[in-house]
Length: 144
Image (cartoon, rainbow, N blue to C red; front, side, top):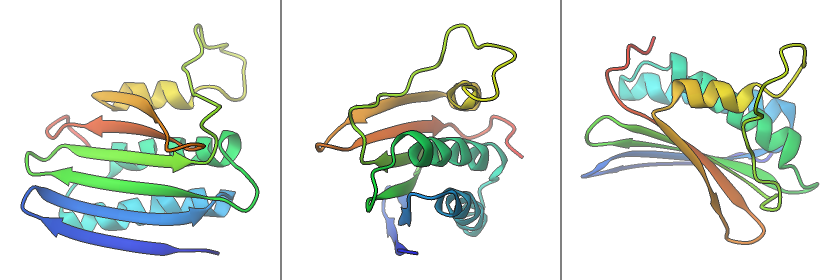
């Protein structure tokens, strides 16, 4: 498994980045690394770990290109806002929340979960052929 870690502390906050294989194992590792990193930063990881799990699973299921990894970035701002970014190699597949969600469907709820936990979320295109799906969680929302 390809694993590249980066950790940086700046005057404006903390920054963690890791490149993971676009596999189910890589997605699972993204969640585990998020829990560990947020614990090191003293930030509750419950909702953030769930957001990472959903975004990483989407990167593996819908953003996978054989031989290409996905990247997870965690940015903790000085104000306590956590920004989660997951970048994959399929910029041509822009995620969207299905409307309405089919209650009997076995999939399709991931971005609804992200939208419920995040204060804001969105998609940034590029650099080609990549896209980054991001979510921001403000401090003090009762995360556990």
